[in-house]
Image (cartoon, rainbow, N blue to C red):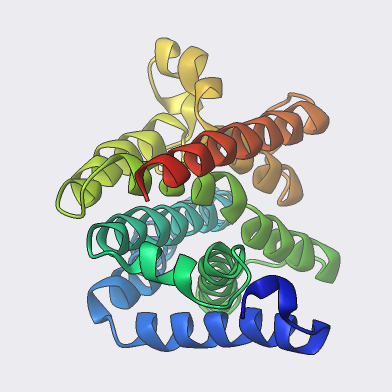
Length: 256
C-alpha cells in the first residue's frame, strides 16, 4: 500500500493526523513552547507598556511595537519550529521512516507549517490582549483582523528559511545557526527599535531582510507607514518563500 492508493478521505485524514500529532509533540516540548509564546509578550509588556507608560507618544510606540513584536514572534516560531525539528528528525532517521509509510509526502511539511501558523495565531492574540487591556491601543476591527492574517501568513518565508537550515545543518548546530540569524535580523529590521532611531547605514541595508518587509506590511496596518510599495514587500516575501523552499526541498531529497 502507498499514498497513491489512498482514498480522498484517507488522504485528508493523513494530513489531519500528522498535524494533530505534531501539535501534541510540540506541546510536550516546553523548551520550544514557552519561549515561542512568552518572549514576544514579555518584550511587548516591558517596552510597549511599562517603559512607555506616561511618556508622550506612548500610544504610537505601543502600536508600532504591537506590529513589530508580532513579526518578531512569528519569526521565532517558524524558524525554530522548522530548523531545529527538521534537523533533529533528519539525523534520527525519522524522514527515512516517513518515506516508507503509506502517507502523502507533503503531510510532514504541512503539519509543521500548520503548527507554525497556530503559534503565530496564539502569539498575535496574546499581544492583542496586552495591547487592548494594558497599552490602551485602539484599532478598527479590520486592522486587528489584518494584523492577524499578516502574522499567520508571515510564517511562510521564515518556515522556508528554517526548512533550509534544518536540511543543511545538524541537530546540534541548527539552534545556534537560527540564533545567529534570528536576533540580528530582528534588530536590523527595526523590530526592536525604529529604523529612524538607528544609524543611516542600517536603514539602507534593512530591505535585505525578509523580516523588514513583513514588518513594513504590519506597520502600514497600524498607521506607521514608512513608505514603500505594498506590492513590492509582498513580492519580495513571495520570492524568498519560493526560492528557499525549492532549495530546501532539493536538499531534503538529497540528504534525507
